[in-house]
Structures are given as structure tokens and as C-alpha cells.
Length: 186
Image (cartoon, rainbow, N blue to C red; front, side, top):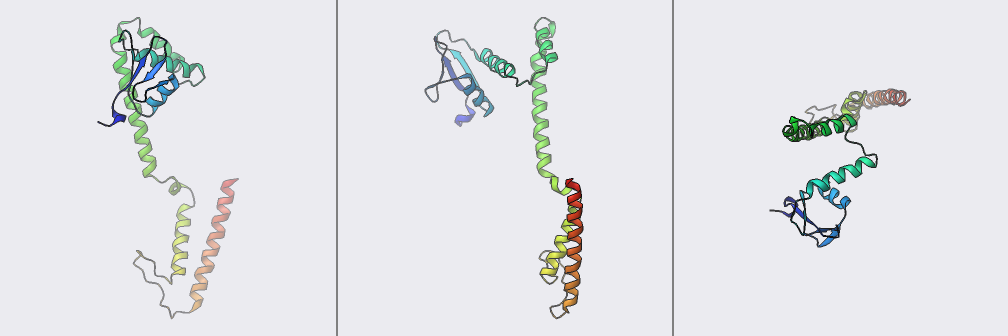
């Protein structure tokens, strides 16, 4: 098993200092938060009693972030959490929260995949016209022979007038596209 897959053991000494058993040095709550953000599972135990203090320290990390204005939990959710400690719903809340976060993570992953698949530039107005202009330009520059296009253009012995017409058409289309893009930018 790789180190990043193993649970990172943190020991709390009587002085309340936290000791990383992998690197043999002391760590802060922010260091622990960074380990978790990097995908590590962390377990914090009291050296003397052997008690698992992980939940207590994770809640402390959350409370510190919330007190610094990094509000993730809306007040109504916090109120509902407090209420859940005094109701019979206590047994359902952990499973519900775990399932909700799993759904959120899956949704975020799916959204990122969809964004990567769909090129956002292709959806911009004028991009299809630009693509057509690029094809026409390449066709004019290569004498009508574009790799992968399967079309052969005019033979090399055709007159230069056709090339001049194509080039003029490309210039006018480019001017039109630049005009449209400058209007979009305003």
C-alpha cells in the first residue's frame, strides 16, 4: 500500500503538541488540514490515554475556518446540526451527511468532466465562421490540397485570379469577424 493511501497517525503529547509519526516532527492544525485536502486520511490519538481525538480536532479545524470568515456551513445548517443532537434523528444524520457529501463530490466530478469534454470556445458566437475562414485560408495557401480534407483544389496551372479572389474573400471575412468580435468586447 502506498504511503498516501495509509492513514496518517498523529500523536498528541501531554503538552498538547501534535506529532507526525511519518516525518517525526511537530505539526499544526493547518498542517493537518493540508494533509486532508491532499487526500490523506488522518487519525489523531492521545499518546497517554490512547483515545481517538480525530473528530475533536477536525471540528476544531472547521471552527477555525468558519471563524476566519471562510463560511461553508450556512447558519440554518448549523442550527439543524445542533438540533439533531437533541432529537431521535441523531442516528440518521451522519449517514445523511455522508451520502450528501458523496453526491456533491460526484456532481462536481461529473461537471468537471463535462466541461473538459465540451470545448467552451466552440460555443462562442462567431467561432464557426472563424473555423470556416481558417479552412478557406489553408485551402488557398496549400493550393486547395488540405491534408485530411479529401478535396483536391485547383491544379497548379490554374490562373492566379482564382487565388486572388479566394484571398480577397478571406480578407473580407476576417474584417467582418474582427468587427463582430470588437462589438462583442464592448
